[in-house]
Length: 85
Image (tube, rainbow, N blue to C red):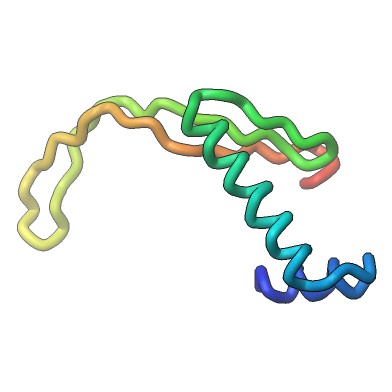
């Protein structure tokens, strides 16, 4: 699917697929790095990428039914804007 998006953008803009792919890859790398550093990344008309804390909790191993304590962790999250929904 990512390949299809790159292809469609290349056709619509007239730029080479390799250039479009490099730009898209760099954009995603920057978003990932900024979120990992605790920053919020807002893209107008699209949404917000941010890091969220997940509380420590108890889970179960489905194979052994053994309780496992999971520590607090940080996960990436995306919240789409109303226009995107």
